[in-house]
Amino acid sequence: MNDRGFASDARLSRQVNLGRALALIRTRPFISQTEMAQELGLSKATVTDIVGALKRDGLLESVGRGEASPAGGRRPRLLRFNPGAAAIIGVELDMSGTKLALLDLGLNVLQRQSIPAPPKRDADAVLARLISGIRNCIDAHPPKAPPILGVGIGIPGAVDPESGVCLFAAKLGWRGVPVAEIVSRRCGLRTVVDSEVRNRAMAECSRGVAKGVRNMAYLQVAGGLGCALMVDGRMYRGATNRAGEVGHNPVVEGGPVCACGLKGCLQMLTSEQGVLPLLKARVEASKDTQLNPKKLTLQGLFDAATVGDPVALGMVNDIARHLGAGVARLINTIDPEMVVLGGRVFEAGHGLLLDNVRDAAQPLIFDRASRSVRIEASTLGADSGVMGAAAGVYQRLFEVPPAFL
Image (cartoon, helix red, strand yellow):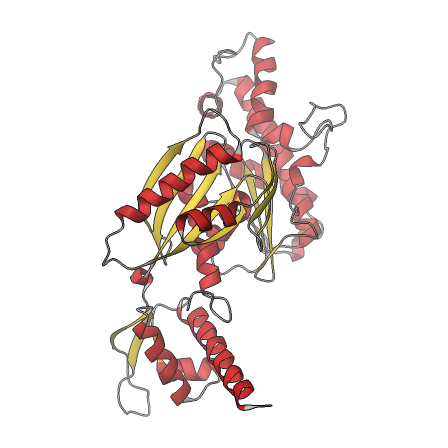
């Protein structure tokens, strides 16, 4: 190997060590250089070099001294990750419009804006409005403020995260749209694109109820029913980036026709697009309800169920029963530590749904006595999508080697 080869190996080794150090530091409130050296298996000199580099980039800061060891000696200087060292733009595209937010590296929302959907939902029109919003965010960012590292985008459809191409988004009518390339070229920022449901799952693992969980399933119960799977700390995508289409599993013979062409799909019995038509038919056929068939909404359904409306209660119980069965199938198939439920339907009614979903799932879980799986509701609310989109960029920052250093 020539000298150039040795130099190249040394640079790669340093980048790998930087990535490992960043991954460790971001999981700790405080850490000393001695602890870093011990946990990373590196020499004190190497750790000193890493700490100096991360401090120069603003990613690490000193926060005083810790306790001395029982053997005595100097108290160690403590360090912590600095989430304010940079910012990320997080985006979630939807049929009703686009959510855009500026977040720090801790995924705290600093600014947010809503971008109305254009009259035409074609890619050119939607991305033109999105790019305008991103440019406005960049222009408003003070010159001396920490830099914006990149843009993360969530799309309701199948995405190739490596190329940033939207493979297919039925709700938007998109196929083969190079979203990352278009946004990156027009805005001058590194752009990471993924499906909205995987972004929301990423947010749960980064900041939500699933923080620290390595094996989990996230079910998004919204306009449709989507699922993201985290296996051994990595997002499972499948051979064609379409893993998690649990909503298109028929569960009721002769049920309502789904947009996919099948009948009785799980999403037609649990999601907004399926539940409201079913509810309308029940309301029209009943005299014992306060609901107006011409003014049905998700929130109205759960409000009516809360005060004991029999039609609303029956609908809510059916949603919980079908979701519980779907959750049990997931648990039996992938053996997760946790299943997290989120999305508009669950946000509107989780006070009524969560315990009922748990009760419906438990009898259907194989060998449940020996499992400790938890079924939880998302705690992140409406910002979950933009947080997850930013988390995709955040994760790239902590790749080995880091993508942005």
